[in-house]
Image 1 (cartoon, one colour):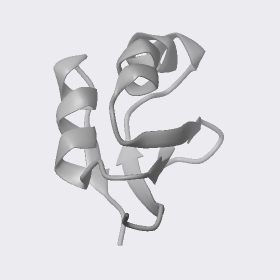
Image 2 (cartoon, rainbow, N blue to C red):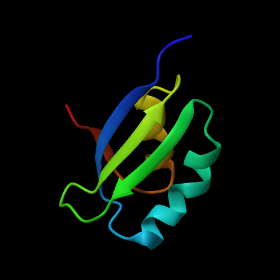
Image 3 (cartoon, rainbow, N blue to C red):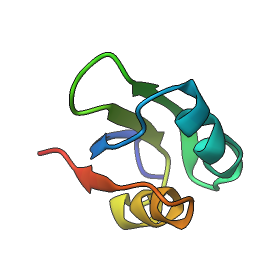
Length: 73
């Protein structure tokens, strides 16, 4: 089994209301241990503890709810 990996994304999830729109999808996505969004910084960083989900899959979830996400390197 692959070790858990931390993925970080720059998003436009600006507030709790925005975060709540992606919450159920991220909570129920297979391959995510834990996730959080830090809305206090300009980049609105989404951090995902992955146990198998890919960066592209996380981006697709966020985009499906009408928001942007791009990987932070």
